[in-house]
Length: 592
Image (cartoon, rainbow, N blue to C red; front, side):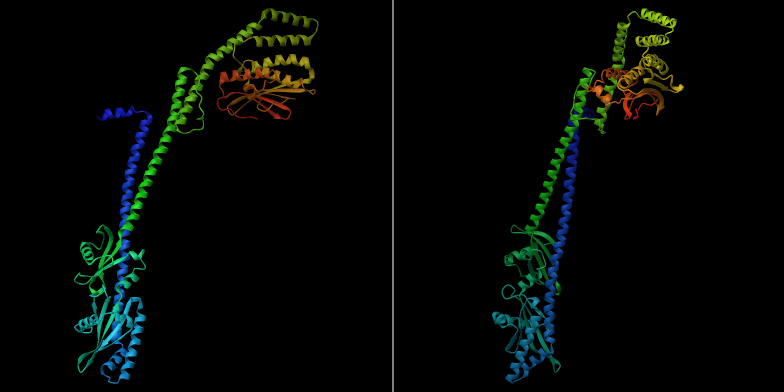
């Protein structure tokens, strides 16, 4: 089964294989990304919960601190000597003027305490003694029913001067703290008065949550030491608050109540043995978290779509290169040329596709070179032989005639005519003979010597010729009749165009594993890119371009495209032709 599946996959098209690989990679990457992001979001949510729980715990600490401050304030009130002295006056003095002054002093002192502790949301401070009372804020004290104060005074009598918190009226009149001011007299305690502090609990909670983000959304449920709810938000009922307090199982959690979610934090509220539940609407937080999760997943999907899009484009681009290569192969299989034209060049490509294209193109070019060497060269040879046959108008008769002219010239003392006839005979033999494709440099120089003998007789001192060829290079080989046409070209362009003498020099040297045979003359110059212009047909070379191109083609057919002619100017008055021949290295250098 496994082998059958592998065999089936191997027969997939290249497009299908790449698509399968990319699809598997994308699916794996997407799965891992979603899993990792989900873990990250969950970890982030946990950190958010802890941070929010810490912030809410801070508000509860502030509430507890304020309640402790109120207790401390009552302790200072009952121990304040001025207050105690004025309470004694109210208790024992019969003169109304002294009692009136004592009341005024107590009101002032209580007002000062309330102003000092105003940040603790104190509604009013009252002291009850006998049938009279003194208060820091009469309107607030008067709004509280007398039975409330009577109940609190009764509770404090049984607590031996310790503070008593009364939570019975939190929903209507606020939170109350009662405490007796007592005096030791005749080895017993007597009550000088009862201090009652009214606390606006709702305002106290609101002021403690101002440092939290969205403080208006923070809500509190408070329970006494018996877990009885005594304070809850206005939008809750007592039943709902009690039900929520029973559902809460850990220090903080998300809890649902009547289709509403709350982030809830619970704990103890200071030394009162009270318990609190701090509530924060979870819908706002949940919406933010859900929006974040949605944005993340949308980003993943967009990234996935972009990956698939780019992959599709890249695969199409790669496969188009492969298709071009296949088309090239099909074209070459039906012919021997690269007739298939493409818009994109692969010469500068270094990737595997570019390497395949370049190697295939090199293979085709090498094949074409072999075809040219084995067929084109043979055709050129046959054409040269045919041309030679056409020009061989009975060469033996021609040689015999020239020989007769030579002997006759010698007989009558015409040495110039004799030299010219001998040179012409030698030159004719070299021109007509095509049995050898290549000759030695020494042989080619002899042919040039025959030609120059004729030209020197014609032009006299106006033509000067010299050779600088080391004996070690006389045996190097080069195509038949390579140098003589170049010398003829120099005479045509220089000697016949100038008045002063024409100097022609043939030299040879070995340089960087090349044999370089040079022909230079004064009195003429090559145009820029002369050889290239002759090859592409933009310049004819004034009749001699055909001969130069013939030399270039014959050298490259025999030795390869890296060898051949180089036409350049040595300075403003000297034309130079360099013939590059193989000397052991295969890279052509630039000489001028």
